[in-house]
Image 1 (cartoon, rainbow, N blue to C red):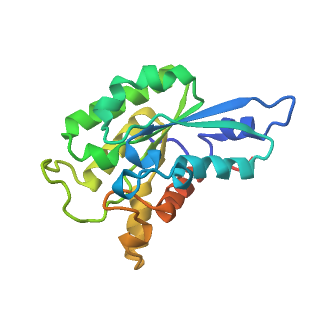
Image 2 (image 1 turned 120 degrees about the vertical axis):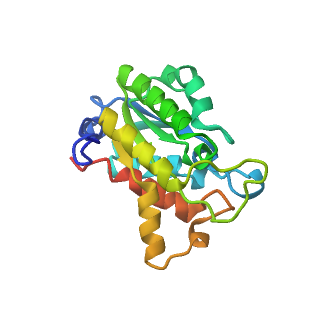
Length: 220
């Protein structure tokens, strides 16, 4: 069973609520591909419009006495198999309290077995290190055909199912970004409202992702 949204990050929220001199620096690591890096069109990065920064800003507003360090360990063009290989060196070395994973946009070129193995490997290592884990289902692309030399192997729904399965297997958090956007599209919103490029969200898309993450941090 996946973690309970109301309680999974309760200890995290209590840490952020502490006031000097009892407060402490808390690190969040956002691991993944180009989206948490803030890539837009023409490989221009806008990190302050990207969800790691917006998540940081939301936490700071909610917990004004907190000392939060949100780091981005993501790499443009990377999939979860590559991310898993460097996970201990580039992520766990920072001793984060919370780790988020976001690889769905690029994992579509993997097989289900490759994706499942990489997500399980990273999640297991994070838990062994004492971290809390928040998995993100994929943000949408534009729906256009842009894969060129690469053949897409997994749909967004198939990737979301693997991520759901991982969250349930390890009882960790799941920010259901895919479901949130599908609900918005069903209400009449268009993909272009949330996009900066064919496969990257714009500021409004990143705000939606950050909101999905902030839902996991309870008011205490």
